[in-house]
Length: 194
Image (cartoon, rainbow, N blue to C red; front, side, top):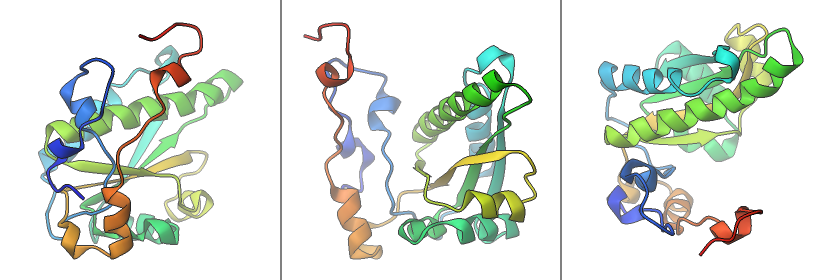
């Protein structure tokens, strides 16, 4: 695994905004590094200012800092394969307020995705790493955190990049895999690339 995120830049057809090219989702977190409050607030602000359908602002955030009660609750909901996230400095649950109409319910998930993307890019600009996860018990979180009708869609681990020698071998192996995406020609269906 490259411990220098610049060694993990995305291979793109043309240059893209550097923080987007540098964004990746490592699993090796520094388990002692503390997150500065200003960094965490900046991530939430970036997420809050993501595009939102119909100005509904359907995204809600639950923040747990390492070892506080909320963090422990969120970490307890993670599936075994995501246990590495217990070393993160914070765990943030992005929830959808699906509202009272079908369209808000449909597009609230799009808003959560946009918020997650903004949060991730802001993290890169601050020298932080994030790893979004779908492997968690959403029903348990809804109950244990008293979320009512909010729908937990993703848990994002936030922190500083950890030492690859200090993580379990299977985590180091997963983080060392090449960054890959399907070529543009395979995902753009109506316009010739190149």
